[in-house]
Structure formats: C-alpha cells, structure tokens
Length: 311
Image 1: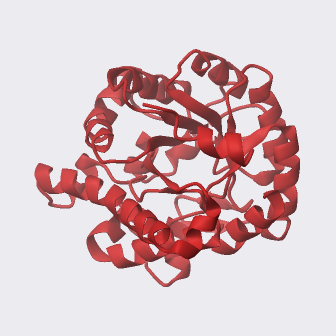
Image 2 (image 1 turned 90 degrees about the vertical axis):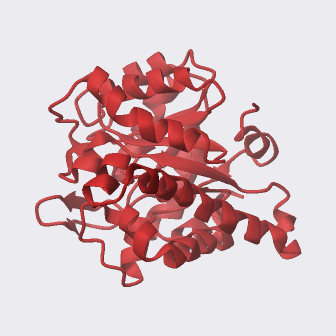
C-alpha cells in the first residue's frame, strides 16, 4: 500500500489539511455540550458533518479528517447503542468524509486540483473518551498496555473503513504514542500520522520531549508524518525544529486558534491568532513543515487563506 501523502508532497510540496470539525459544528449552531462531542453529530446531524467536510474541500483542503476523534465503541455503548451499532457508526464517520470527497471530485471544476483529496480516519486519545480535558495533560489512570487494549477495537474497525490513512492526533503522552505504535504494527496495511498536543516549545503534554518521541517513530515505514496539533501557534516553529532535528519524515502541524479550552467550564478563552494564521504558516513551511492545516477554532476561511498563501 503506497503512502497516500506522496503525490501531494511530490507535486505540490505541501499538503493542505482541513480545520476544526467540532468547533465548526458549534459555530453553525450545533450544541456539542456532550461527552461524545462531535461524535454526537454522527447520530443526530450527519448532514451537518458532511456539509462541513464539503466546505473544507471547497476551501482548499487536500485532506479531510473523519468525525471519529471522540467516537469509541465504549462511548457509544455507554449511550445505549449495541456493539454492532457502535461499530457501524465508526465506519459511518469515515463514509461521510469519503462521500463528501467523492462528490467534490466528481465535479469537473474541482479536478483542476490535479490530485484527488484524501480522507484520514481520526483516532483521538483516551482523554477524548474521558471528556475531562486530559488529552491536554496525559494525566491518565492507566498505562501503555491498558491504552493499547482500549484503542484496539476502534482501530480494527477503522482499519477496514476505507480511509486512506489514520490521523493519530492530540496524543498527550509517550504511553499513548507507544500504544498506537503497537496497534500500527498489528495492521501492516495502515499508514498513519502521529501528532501531539504540546505545552511549550519542546514538550508534549505529559512532559516528554517531542524530539524523543519523533526519534522513536522514525524507524516505522507506516508512520508517514510526525508533528503537532491543537497547540498554540506561538509554539509551532520551535516544535517543528525539534522534529526536524531527529527525522527526515514529513512534518505535520495543525495548531488551534491560540485559545485554551477549559474542560471544567467547557469553553475556550484567551487571545485568538486567526488573523495571523496564513502568515505564520509561511514560517512553519520554511522551518520544514509540509502538511499544514488547523485544529480547534479554525474554519474554512483559515484553510482557504492557507492554500492561497502556500500554493
């Protein structure tokens, strides 16, 4: 199975990701004050999720990410669904993105883009299932083996969903990264990117040096990109340098708006940097990032700006 990122990086030099999904759903009036967060929309508003995917493609995204970040079999079953229904919803999350991509590509107007956009299946961290903000701390009550066991069923379901690759994202700890690596080795047909939530210019959320993690991931041919997401834009350039110092793999960055999420109050606070997003992306590209998009509180407008700035 060939690396799905290669055509974009060879022909364009950069791949444009989409932006935030859940916060874009909220911006359109959908209430996500729920432990399932965006995954709740799979049951109630799949049409809106599909529209957000389409809007990101129209804005210029080369890759859209499925609404499975907070979708887990246990989370759905806790809501009263059967195991089979939970599995079906996970596959459905990818199908919504695939359908939006295929509809976009079927329009001859869009084929001026030359390369058909791809779909990544989101694999969020254990903290997303807990819905307590711990994906930004890595402060879990379980270790590597239990994390591997927790993620295994969802991983196997998504591996047969038709996604082009996995987005292992907002990883806060070394234990969770190693758990994902174990699951990746169990599914040799899968490619994945690994992106971490970081607290400063060098460290991921549990305090591990990002460079140490990137070095551990460097030997795997299945890991097609390493980087950072849902992290303040002011840290990105330094973090790109940390990754570039230990690996030649493509570097992926999709920061949030610069605001901080309060898990207890369930709201975002702090200063936004959206006005500088596209300008900052040039610096990230010059530092070595080649896969660039947005995370929470970014939307189609920012992705359109990115594409115009970088391509």
